[in-house]
Length: 529
Ligand code: ADP
Ligand code: ZN
Image (tube, rainbow, N blue to C red; front, side):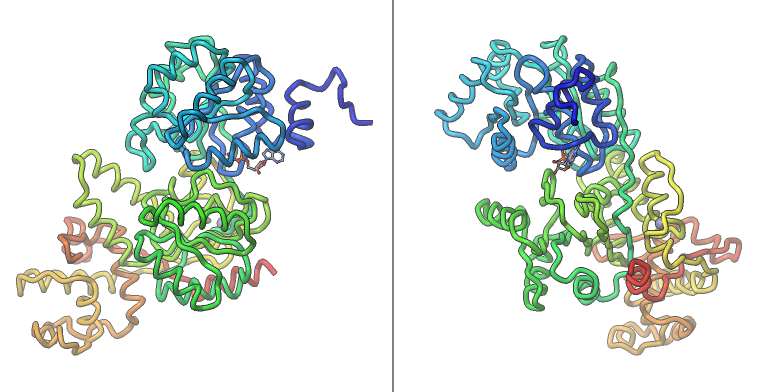
């Protein structure tokens, strides 16, 4: 006998079963829900797919009045409301996409207590009319979704979120729950401070997503590598491929389509209709691959995304974690694969140097990038590093590329000296600066047109690097950049020495580097079978 109405079952559990049709709560949900039902404020940190929505939906149903949900995801409000309506929950939304009449109907439903949940775009709360509307009804709680949007230096900052600190002053008795999947302890503190949530209880769910296999591969021929990943490990699976620019999104989508993979593009440059259509198809159809910029994904709830591939380096670990977290929400084995190379480092360093904003801002961006680079270059378990970034501890997971085919570090002091000395000679003897391509050509002793044009075959370092191949040399340059032993300068990505370079050139410093395992993809696949 299931104790459907037994006295030992809480209101929350009853709603979970009756309305949402789930048997039990997931980790963390029940505690949060009970705290909010009892009127407490909460700051909820839970990974994407962890089940944050129920943490405010159930309290809104249990408490008297209407739960007001602030969400930046205007494009998804209709879907969210439709999904709730299908479950018999009375929900509505107010945002700028609506006609006057539609808005009026939602407002009158709110006032007459015929709503359980009301979704609002944050800019609505800047309008006096909205504040007066909320005053005239009964609000059971405020849920602030995607709360990291209040973090000023975060990648999703929305100025409208700053106004949300006023909710507490105007409605001191209404509990507030702020939710996010993105939070280092620092962002975490910023959210609490900016939203006036000093007294809120913090709920931090485990950030580990054990079913996701994290892999970071050296980028050689990204298209071929991507195609091989899809063909050998994920044929016919739904997946997301992230690219940095709109034009690479278009090109990769075309490339995949041309190679028999059903793929769609998504970026902010497409018109709203195409975007909405592609998104709807991705959600509805099986086995589609979405090639997208980071404009795609926030709030997308598709449980069976089997892989997330990054063809360009994400700007921060938080972004990486959030994007990869869209894989495997159903808990089944999934892949997070990132291809990463020298050009990524050069490009991102350049972007930071030329970015708007003051020195503090640039330093912060550089800090985000460095943390991401550390994750890429680590010889430790990726998951351990990832969790450590979020202030959590983990054991080597056995399900990431470094666990499956342990990366070794090697003594790269001599190759490092060769690269640095080439840069040094060009700067000193020729008053010239060049990018990585030319440095590698000189080391390999290649008489390219550009080498001959600049008479670089006369340098003493010409041809001293035949012990390594081109890809390996590029790897050495990349790791020198990551370790701060070389720097990028100017618009052309030319390489220059740093203060630390002298220590290596002067043989006072040893340089250790990560040796790339031969074929991480194969090894990982074999281990899974
Ligand atoms: P988040 O907002 O944290 O990314 P969602 O709230 O969208 O995650 O939940 C992710 C998925 O998990 C949804 O499909 C949701 O219905 C499902 N889910 C949430 N809680 C439970 C539960 N207790 N039992 C089963 N499924 C759940
Ligand atoms: Zn691992």
